[in-house]
Length: 206
Ligand SMILES: Cc1cc2nc3c(=O)[nH]c(=O)nc-3n(C[C@H](O)[C@H](O)[C@H](O)COP(=O)(O)O)c2cc1C
Image (cartoon, rainbow, N blue to C red; front, top):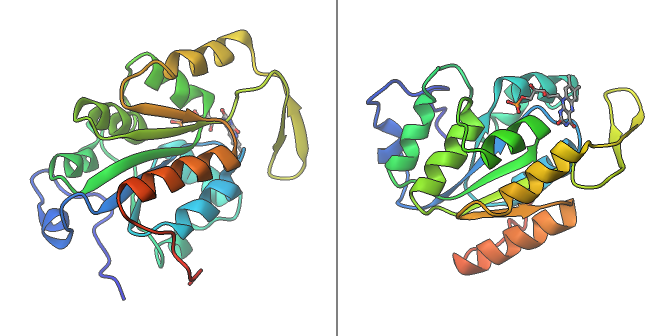
């Protein structure tokens, strides 16, 4: 049984740091993408020691896709985007996290990360991790000229514009960032990272 953490640590709150070993956790950021949301969450649940960091849109989209935050709390510690300055990002400086994952990443978040903008919890996590040399893995969903995506009620065909595809390519050039473009690529990147850390996938789904 895990202690419930505060959803947003107050500035200067060091409770989280005291509860966690150094470089012991994944920081997994969820943005407002319905595309590959289910697949991303399945992979997050298979990893050891994961905290979720939600963008405001991510919080809404999780609920729309019936992934209820109250239920996710039984498995993950959850930090929501309730502060202008990205207060939970302070935990990166406490040395808790060894890896920052953005999955799934919206076109919006990909664009911001590619251009060094950090004005949401996921984009702040990504930027601040990079500045500390903490590896980032970004699952960019708009990576093909034609994308078949699941809307809340149906399947929809999208055609990402040149700017979305260009932003993904630009993101690939950012330091300490690995971009993946499919659930299989995300799983492979996480597998590599686990091996680097001498960690393993969870064997139980509970
Ligand atoms: C149901 C729903 C599904 C969405 N799916 C996507 C998506 O797959 N990809 C995307 O880029 N944006 C998607 N959006 C739009 C983003 O949520 C929106 O651009 C938001 O501002 C992104 O904010 P964030 O990047 O800070 O999470 C979706 C919105 C809704 C309401």
